[in-house]
Amino acid sequence: QAFDECDIDKDGKLSLSEFRMWIKRTPAVKRFLQSVFPYDEHRDYRGDTKELPFIHNHADDATPQGSPGGGGRRGSGERGGAPAAGSREEALSLLQRAQAPPEQPPAAPSYDDLPSMSKHRHSMKIQTSVRRGPRTYALAIVNLGLGFMLLETARAECGSGVARKGFLSKRGQRTKQWQRRWYMLVGNCIYYYRNEQDRTPRGVIFLIGSFIEPLREEESEKTGHWGLDIVRSQEQGVRRCLYASSKSERDAWVRDLRRASEVIPIEEDFEIGEELGKGQFSRVCLCVNKRTLERKAVKIIEKDTMDAEERELLRAEIAIMKLVEHPNIIAMEAVYESRQHIFIVMELHSGGELFDRINGRPRLTEDEAFCVIYPLIESVAYLHEMGIVHRDLKPENILCGQKMGDIKIADFGLSKLVLPDEIMKMPCGTLSYVAPEVLTLNGYGREADMWSVGTIMYLLLRGRLPFDADGDSRGKIIERTIHGTIDTEDATWQALSEDARHLMLGLLNKATDIKRRTSAKEALVHPWITARVDRMAEDPAAFDL
Image (cartoon, rainbow, N blue to C red):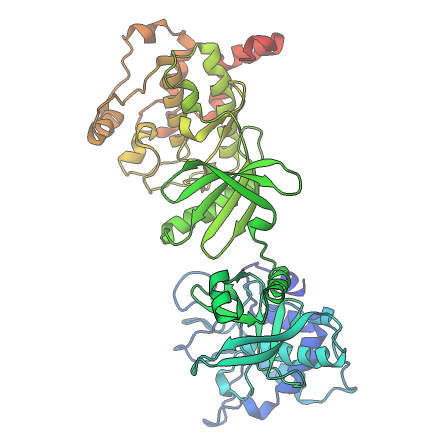
């Protein structure tokens, strides 16, 4: 809590001024810093210049918390950055004050006094010495201090606050020989000692954000050691394997470590069932909440198959689904993560895709099409008001309920949060529903969504796509989308009402100025919509299709 309050700019790390504020608000840390920052230990003996541990004075180094590249806010320890004005003097003053011993010996801190070091949850091994010279990093020292404060507290309080303790084994990094150590789980950290009587820990593992998984049963049965993995989500490939002497002991450690890591596996809450659909990087399955027995859908994404751009899109998808709340947009229930997968649990809409509902049947009447188009435009207007562009609206991404008008937009995998006049460049979407400005690579905005709405409306009323015929090549579809025109002389087109034709032409407007395309707000006050809204208010049963 103290970290969150002091992280004013919410970037997950503390600047010098934020760090000083955090120290002041956390007495246990302040007392420790006063005990380990003797002035002369941090002097650089190159003349009289004092090099302080809070400030990097060398441009060729970057702090563990700072990015060596460009972008983002510069800090005193980042490459190319410079300390804020007065920060050197402030740090010197702080260290000078730390020389004086406290008036009274500090009381041993309780477990509740010990703060969580970082929202990024770094796992650091405790060093046996703090004499690290002028480039000592404050964050590493504080992590070190917390470890030693905690070990004294753990021993002094006779196990109070210790969630689990006992012997576990591990393989030595160099010798690969079995090593038996005494482990204590306190809060979100696990400390290990050479033996049960030892008062000095060999190291500490920070657990928050880690994946705790039991090793395969076959492997454990062969070796007689029942293993578990501790893998940090931000340190891909870094794993710690610990082994218990029995399956029941291992399972108890797994349960308590998961609770301490605050990473709950999806299997604890949901039972995953049959597959409902499959995409390039993910599949959608039925799942059942073990407590409420409610049926949900879960999108399962494989991490290893995604590149950096796809991971960024996934982060945007999750952020957007957390943000939106609309009756015609699929709601996200929860997100889970394991070493290999990300699980997005969503509400289950049982009627299937709009594509399946219209495929193989005669074209819809205008009233039937209204039941789909009206809530679709309402939800797109909501998204655009929130600064969200879907970028892949199509019948396959519109889910139906039992009734025609009970639709929900799904699959925000290509969606993006944009500024009011932001121009996007990345071409994406489904070719038959993509706006011409996306294909010309000249940049596009939220108007591209309205082109997709117009294409869906045309499909519902005409029974075919406006610029895509069966057997057309990709090149032909692109050419028609950019340069083709709507056949307004077609008999079926002529049979539609004038309002329907006017709305579709507005949505499928190819004008160079894409602002001339009908927006979602404009579509909602179009006569084709408003006339049916009025009729629906008078006779709801007429639109209960």
